[in-house]
Image (cartoon, rainbow, N blue to C red; front, side):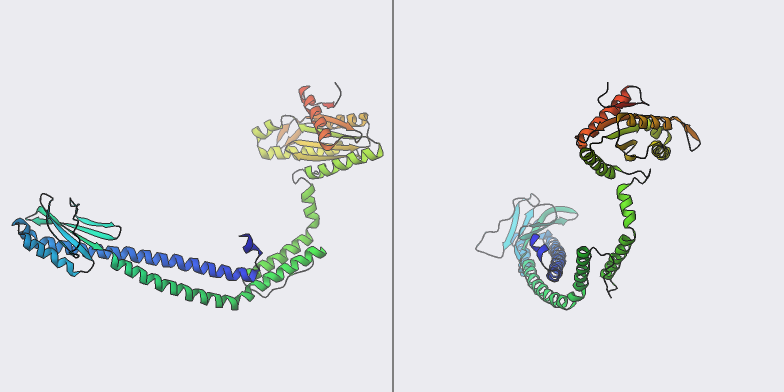
Length: 403
């Protein structure tokens, strides 16, 4: 498979066409041969059944009078068919009464006991059993064994013809592919060249051209439409990458980048920075009892109140669910306390959502750093402070490191 991927598209097309043609023809040929084999076996079984019935009806008198010579003559008539190997006649005691065989040098191996009337296929031969009836009473049975050599010869001939047809079909497919493949692969190659130019020059104004009206042409037109949208929506893509679509706050991705920058800036400048973690108290209860629509409205209102409470040197982010963070730079501990109190005050006013009055509160955890923390350590510190605030009764704040 890896070697196939390295092939040129021109060669791949030839391989695919020849491979699919081969598989299709093989399955078709196998299906036809199998069906023919089944039908021929059905025909053979029907023929042997008819022969066995004829012999059975002709042998009723011979068997009833124990005329073994007459019975043997009746069985001998079956040998007119070349595929019949031998035939046996059983009396009413299920004992062999008479038998004939084609090859006199080999003793006919009549089965010790006859089977129920019907046709039975074995490996390489068919046995047909038919009861001998006299006045509606079964007085014995006839068994005819015939080889499947005629069917095997027919199958061999069909296989030879099928191989010839397969070879001729593959040659025809190869010649047709040679003449048609350029119309198929050239637009794809040209499209790849355009994509490489766009990547190399970072120029989304380049477009691919085509005169194809097929799926390849549709793909090229779709590619050009995609370029149009990328070119027109660069700003929108950036916004989607860095902002939460529900609350319009900056998202976790921007938070991660800003936190790294804030720590590096604090380390270089000597100023301290603060990280605030907060979540909404009992938000899950509101979500479960009033539904996700009310929960979404609550999150949007909380985001607006959070932004309204922040000073100019602070930025709010939504990490997900009811989890929010705030980054505040160039601060002392008193600045962070003021921000936390402003948030709690802003959240103290009840909300009216969809005709329902809701009270909202928040638990806040604060961590202060001089830049010597890493991302993991300062987030862990703020998270610990947040859970300390929850344990203290919610709707309050805790600063990491304070008792």
